[in-house]
Image (spheres, rainbow, N blue to C red):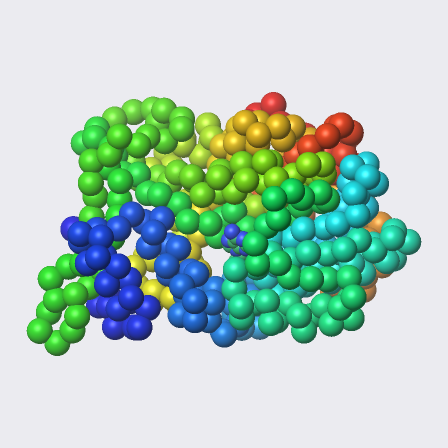
Length: 377
Ligand SMILES: C[S@@+](CC[C@H](N)C(=O)[O-])C[C@H]1O[C@@H](n2cnc3c(N)ncnc32)[C@H](O)[C@@H]1O
């Protein structure tokens, strides 16, 4: 058992109560769901600035905890809009569904991009768990108030083009820990209180029948994640989508790379004030918690429900295939410097991937015209 920071916050109290109520232990997925999404006090539910950016080389922060592609440069959504226009036409649908829309910047960029392309504006539906972010999105998208609406629950049947940027990485994961050759599920428990404070949140491992979906070579100790909720999300989408396409962009790898024997500390990461750390049990509710995406797992989940993979490639290829260069030429020098970070190999170009599926007849989507890596999944 490793000791961690004391449970002092209101959210910490709530989590401690749920640990008590469940017999002294909760799985990490339960902990992560509570830490991020508890109404009012969870990280994504709180009224604090999360999204920001850091100017290259200058070390200057614009606030927030982390930066995402649409916050870094409007070129992200503007370029994606070209693929969205093609997908709406090819699937003969007129609705975009964006899950986890953050500040609303990507939606704004896409709607402006579609307008600039002369494409008929679709209905734009946002699915957002956080009331605080929804309020922010409503401000950002005020100019498109007649096109955009927010939905609380998904209808039985959907059609259209589904989008999610850095969505799956924010979904709760389970932790698996191989110790001395025996697999455990890593969860959260309460340690011994010291006289001046409440019981701290501590890690606790329990033997489990769960296994990573890909055999991890070797016998060495190995901590990793499995992504039941992300995969269930893709299954739900596939079941509900009558016709349309899905584009998910996120950081991650195919399973052979994800469960590489050398990745023995997993990919779980927290972000707070633009610093990364690996301790989700401290500053609960104040920092983002995230894990990389296993794209093979998502592809297989989609296959089970009739979603056919349209393509899978890194973000640099995807954006360049969609017309990044044409969009770039419309920016000034400072704008270009920021936009380039979307495609640079050591920034977002290689680690981030785009995976797309279709329900209905497939077509050669522009985003995957070069550099498609579906065969590596
Ligand atoms: C890392 S943020 C990314 C935000 C935005 N897409 C961007 O790129 O700036 C993750 C977002 O996913 C949302 N989210 C997580 N799970 C979700 C779900 N099941 N349905 C809808 N939104 C979800 C969070 O509330 C948050 O807005």
